[in-house]
Length: 381
Image (cartoon, rainbow, N blue to C red):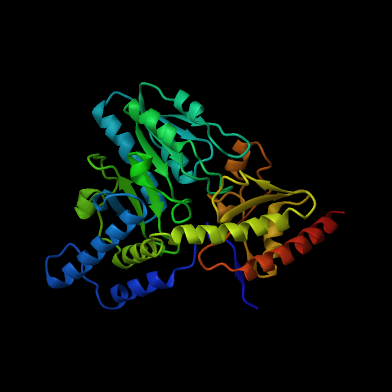
């Protein structure tokens, strides 16, 4: 019996269009895109075409797209670059950074390891940060505001990001948006957000692992975190992963036009049904905002049992979901996101669909889930 994969928010299967675009650059075109010979020009052209495709999906200019290897690298590049820029401007200062308590660990760890003062703004029970709270945290020495576009664990959309960004920009503070969870599932318009830096990644939207990007506002220069080469217009050293970048571009191109809206609508129908059926089980509640959320993500809490045994029970029945902090999945650690929301941090179960998901996948979950929960609750009594 085929397995059912409901963990697209961790990593989504590779789209056929992305694979097809990548294969020539895995089999035939191996040249360094920094070389001026004909073979190098082939790979250079492929990268620049992918840059245009990624820029088009995310409302950016091609020259604003800096390719990185992962979303984590993109986030670290943004935070390290902004902090270093502020430090270089005033060597005696210890910059101040504003972020939120529900950011991905890539953001929080990058801030915490920097020589900065940090204000982590709290959230409501849905995991949403209020614009007034974030704006009130700004100080004259604030160098950076980093805020997510949507939460990676409960799916809540951070609708106040434009207001936060506008207030910060008025005070001359750089703004970074982590859109890795949102990219490819809801519209991400870099120009409309009017922020300085934005992180996106390929593997959560059907592109390959190994490709991501930092969008950098035109005219802004931040020091490169990775040095040693003039690649990416001297903004990220190291030879480019051409196949991965080409695959990212192809996946982005497939989502162009109204395709993203169609996929989001289909995903919403699937997760609405999953949530509705899951909530018919006694003492199961939905976490995060049930309406203003990523269309492909549902997070629930199961009363009376820990989430890990539920995950393992579903896995035995061929259904893959996620539990615990999505930043520390290998250890199945309690979720700092849920702790910040004031709910039980040990009881989150996250199911996510993607471009390849079907009604049959939801059928499999809604059949297995009540059986698993009932069995575990019986063991406790």
